Length: 179
Length: 213
Image 1 (cartoon, chains in turn yellow, brown):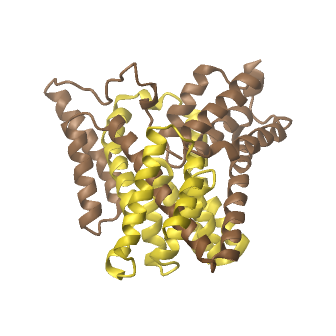
Image 2 (tube, each protein chain N blue to C red):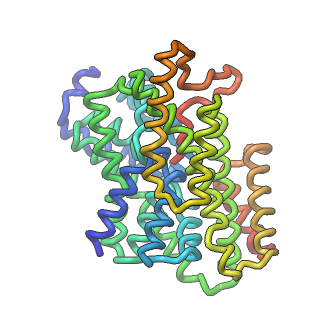
């Protein structure tokens, strides 16, 4: 199990262009297709991972690793998702500091950034509502409550410049009131 | 001074690198930018380990490489100060507190998960996290979509993700391929070769990379 955890999260780490949010749907897909967790569990894990500091993807890896194989699993999964960044950034820092100024690299990122944007938008949809459509367990008012809180959070951050952590705490209170 | 710090495996530096990033770790809440500001304060201003120009290189590389901006920045600074071991030290330093915090959080939640109020609170948090992802997505829309090709690529990728079982590796490989082809065609036809949006000076927060943790 430890080897499997390491390999999966190492692969996710290699593909995690655009940071944690863009990698979320990949983690959800890989972990649920292996039968490790279901969509509802992933919702819990992602929510806890998003509450803590650090990358939501690395935090999710920590929690899935812990769920599968205890503390060792948590460490292995975290190491797996972090190592590709470590290796690549160290290599870039050593040899190619100005690589991003190269025209070919600019062309690569010209095509990659819109894809990352799509991955992040999809992650919001997939993590927010994925798995709930078919199950029938999510009542309409639950979805409505979620949209209300989600909209309130956006308003609080964009309009009133709340700190994200304050918004999460307020959302937790709102959750207790609504659900 | 700077060259002495850069000389590679300076073992005395390792505990200091570790402690510096241990301290930065918990501040990575709220996105890559919160953390970049902390790194600038701790590494550039307080400790003088890097200058502003290196900080700029760090931001570019940390945003372009896969993974979160926080871990990538730590790897960059650690490497600059203490070679490969320095990079490892910095990454462990920044990753340990967050892993510990998320585990504690999860164990606390597990202990109270049967409580209906705790479950309801987590549903609220879920909605808030979705809002944070949406916000990151919106910032990416504004900073990465600026011409027909980028809009079309984003729409096509979103459509493929929503309506087909295509694995995202194909998008991550395909996007850059399309980018290269489009730029090559434009170069042949001597067209405008803009690969990044024109930055509006009144919007400092829309700088690239718009990547999040």
